[in-house]
Image (cartoon, rainbow, N blue to C red; front, side, top):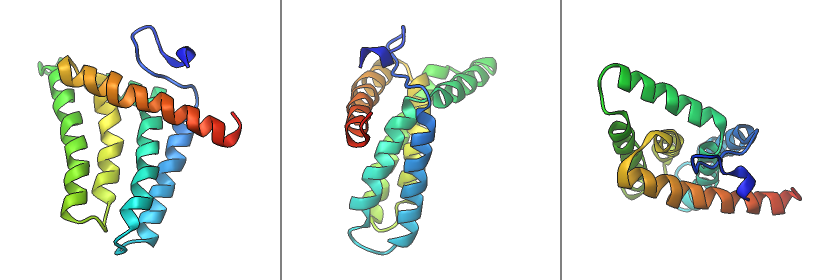
Length: 152
């Protein structure tokens, strides 16, 4: 699994953005089909979380994060701090969405799309914890599981 870790300790898996897109489309579709069921979060959110982890490992999310950080720096905002706050808010927003109404998960799924992009640009303790602890470790674990499931 070390081959997927870049020089700056970021997990990056070539071509994984398409797998992330597949997970997100499946989560969106199931959310629409299962809307209103009390057990829908137990089906939709694991799929969306796997999509979020794969999205974190894609070059697209890193490039989007780099562009947003560049814009923030260009206007004089502390990019790593802003990205850290956005990442933390997105992760807390996922939990809050589930606590408010667990039968409708679209806000949680969108937060799981935003959080990995912000994690790439987050700095400080939050950035290190989210990037290396949450997204880095879990992404490698899920990627290994997906590979085992499909014979990769």
